[in-house]
Length: 93
Ligand SMILES: [Zn+2]
Figure 1 (cartoon, rainbow, N blue to C red):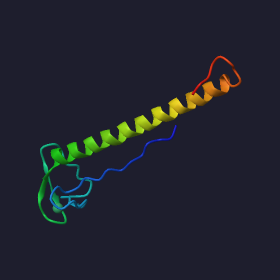
Figure 2: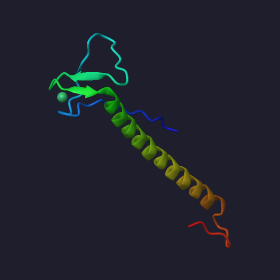
Figure 3: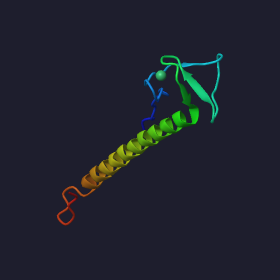
Figure 4: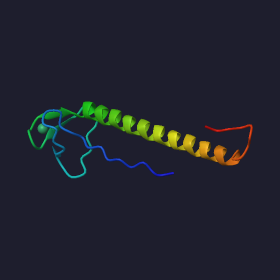
């Protein structure tokens, strides 16, 4: 099974920039805090940014799961078609 790897960037809600001014190296914003956009200077509410990213991640995971299920169903169909190939009474369509 292929591994799902996606990168989702935080984006400024005002200008869509992915660059933020961090007060120091290794800074990790916490819920309820604000991060300043390095491009337009607006303050973004970190919790809102986080939920946008979380929603995107859920969409990506959902799509991935659907693709896996579809592939599993196709594989199973092929196996059944092979298993019953030449059988007069059972046809897998
Ligand atoms: Zn901005």
